[in-house]
Image 1 (cartoon, rainbow, N blue to C red):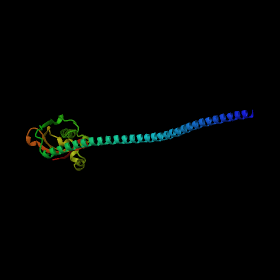
Image 2 (cartoon, one colour):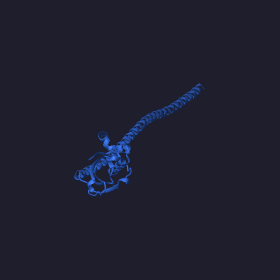
Image 3 (spheres, rainbow, N blue to C red):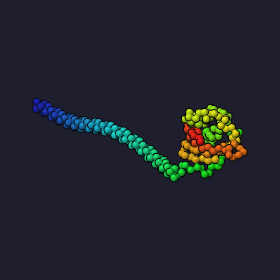
Image 4 (tube, one colour):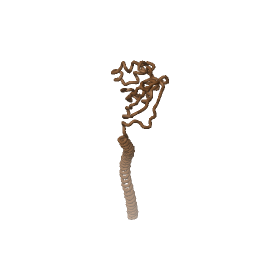
Length: 229
C-alpha cells in the first residue's frame, strides 16, 4: 500500500515537473517574442527619429534652393534691364553722332536761301510775341510805334537795355516817317543766335530807306534783340 502511494506521488511529481518544463518553454518563447518585438520597436523608433531629422534637413534645403532661385531670377531681370538700357544708349549715341556729323557739314554762317522777304506796313504791325525771330522783330517795331516801353523792354536783351536805354526805349520818334519794314534776309549763326536783315522804307525817294542788321538771341524760350546796326 505504501509502495502504491509513493508511486502515485512520484508520478504526480513527474507530471508537475513536466508541466513546469512546458510552462518554462512557453515563457521562454514568449520572452523571446517580446524581446524581438522590443528590438523591432526600438529600430522603428530610431528609423522614425532619423526620418524626422532628414525631413527637417530636406525642408531647409528646399527653402535654401527657393531663395537662391529667387535671387537668380532677380539677377536675370537686372541683367535684362541693363541690356535694354545699353541698347537704348547705343541707339541714342549713334543718332547723336549722326546729327553731329550733319551739323559739321552744314554751313552755319550762310544766309537762308529759301527765305522770302516779309514786308509789313508800319500801321499793320501788332504784338506777335517773341516765339520766332521774325515775330520778335515785328513786335519790336510795333512797340516802337506805340511807344510801349514795357513791351519794348521785353524785346531786347538786358545788357542792351542798360547800355542803350535812351535809344531803345525812346519809342515813337525812331519810326517817324517809316511806312513799312521789310525782313529781307536771315542767317542762323547757331541754334540760339539769328541775324535778320531789315530794310526800313520811308516812301517816295528810295534814298530815304535804311538797312539794319539785327542780331537776336534765344533766351528763356523767347527771341530778343541783342544788337542792331
